[in-house]
Amino acid sequence: MNRSITVIFFSVLLIFSYFAHIEAAEGTAGQPGEFLRWGVGARSLGLGRAYTSIAEGGDALVWNPAGLGGIERWELGFMYAPLYMDSKMGYVSFVYPVGNIGKFGLSWLYLGMDDFDRRDEFNQSLGDFSAYQTAINFGYGRWLWHKRFKLGLNTKMIQYSMDDESATGFGGFDLGFMTKPIKRKITLGLNVQNIGAGTINEDEYPIVLRTGVNYWILRNLLISADLDILSERAIFPRVGVEFRGTRWLLARAGYDGNEVTFGLGFTFTDINLLFTSFNLGGRHTRIDYAGGVTNDVGNNFTRFSLTIAGKEKYGLKELAEAKDPCEHLSEYEPLLYKYGAVGAKANLIFGYCMFRHESIEIPLDSKPEFKESYYYFKEAYIGKYGDDWKNRIITDEQAKAIFSQKTHYQYAESRLHAETVNREALQLITDLNMAGGDSIQYDLRLQYDLAQCYKELGILDSAKIYFKTVAESEGDSPEKIVALFDLAKLLKDGTASEKQEAIKYLETVSTRYQYGFYTEKGKRLSYPMFPKYYDNNIADDALLMLAEIKFSQGGEDNIKEALAQYFKVLLFFPDMHKNNIKLALSGAASCYEELGDSVNAQKLRQKAEAY
Image 1 (tube, rainbow, N blue to C red):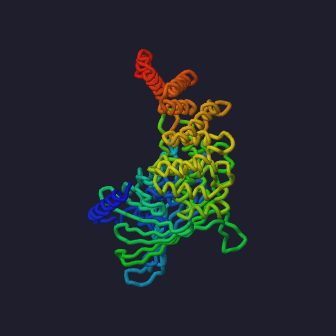
Image 2: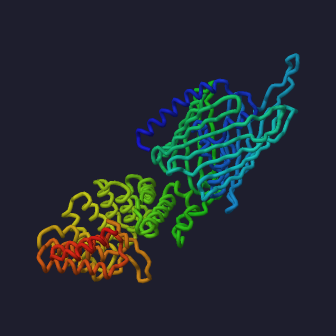
Image 3: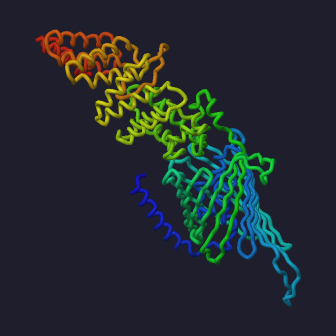
């Protein structure tokens, strides 16, 4: 979405929220299950309870059980919130992934108040008593349809207690749905709650429908919106914003129709209990805080959450040692949104796999776009390391291990294909060239990309310099082959000496590189596709250009030599792309016309028209 669409989207959202709030005026206070709709987790409360499409970990058991499907490691969560009139809410959850079977979660929710003053009909004190409500949740979630969406199911048991009176019953099922991020920007969520709930303490639980959407408006700015629909009762709009300021600090704000909320999140790794030698075993720990203001009853509530998570299934070591990571993309997908080196490496893997597909695996006559690979590479470089990525990947030891000239050139070429070539592209490739990496194996590729960028921008003198540097390099790399051809293309319309230089380069290409971009075993190579050679060969293109130069020089000897080159193309490259066959036939026909042989010229024209 561009900025205009984004502004319109959120303007409509705010207007809709206003009118939906009018519909919500009847409220739900005192309705059965209200303590479940209040919500758990300081992160969700800081977001104004707009959490249906974001729900994750143990909090998903209450908000949307589909969120369980995204966990990749065990998580232990706690929440505590002091409320009005000395009441309090507590929440404990534990979730655990079980291989390919799915993800399971168990939680306990408590809302209660102690020290109620018991009095008789004469207003005499008879001591204290307590009142509380609890819910035990058991949920399951997993990815489905090749990880296109998550589905989750939660069931709950409810208990009410007041003094010596208590009641226990079945709270029904919650069925949740959540998409994967669409275009890595938008996620949709849906949760239908209390399906099949029984009567508890003479109360019938209503069906609750929660719908939500979240949108990454910027790389570090998430906006979410929810609608809670209570059957035959009310509609409640909710909206929240989360900003990821650093790798360890998050700031939040929200509005749920009754209350303005705010919150902070702090992320740690390898946290120790009370800074002692006893390690909790969690590799990722988050402490969240949320507060609320302008509540109808004038309370400033405070909520605190602690989440401790175990070691992830995949880390840098596992990602680096994968023989063919492209076979495990669905498993690596949750890592795309991680911060730091792990998230960057996951994005580099996705970018590489998309690049490999576009440059090698798709049919030769297809037109590669590279938009997906460019997005992943951009996220790995800029999304994870910021605008200072060049210095970060030079100085950060973890970054040095995952970025290389290979990822640099793939990022550069994805950029050149996916968007218009401009000064920003030139600066990007210059920075990538300066950033270096683990070896110099792909330096020529970056030099070639720089030359191509200069050519696209019309800075031909610089383009010639860089093409010549690559063309005169040692070895027979794909970059060298294409550079020779591109350099000849820039020189062919120049002075007589430049034409002779172009002829020399083209003769080299046509004689030394007749097998094109293949290995000795016939496997396609990745080569700079500017332009794309649809038959994966360049020798035929070189012969056609050589014939074109000879023809342009005029004179019977040059015309005959051009004709010989055209026939050489037709004889030695019968499997070349049909466009080249047509060019060769048309070129040979023109030669015959110049030589006065109209009969052969007409025959060849007719054959060319057949293509």
